[in-house]
Length: 92
Image 1 (tube, one colour):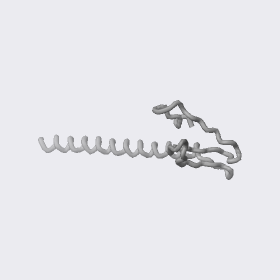
Image 2: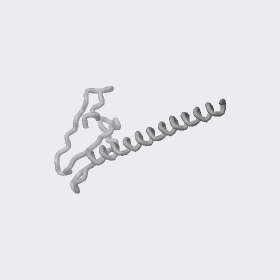
Image 3: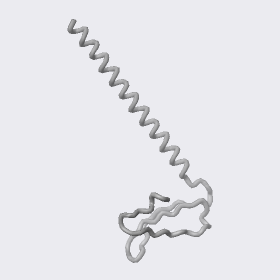
């Protein structure tokens, strides 16, 4: 009787572990799919496009500058945010 209960417990534990593995694999696959979608949506795909990021000295301080656009002939718009702790990069 005891061995029968132990077999049932093993089957239940194996089923739960299998469910967790399937759930984890599905979640990771969905995450990879969404990352690919986001990367495709934000990619610069035109031949005249520009996508550069570099440190530039501004007032003798190295500042991180990102330049992105569909046409490199358009003017660059430099946005200076309000100061420390107020990053504007989330709006790009």
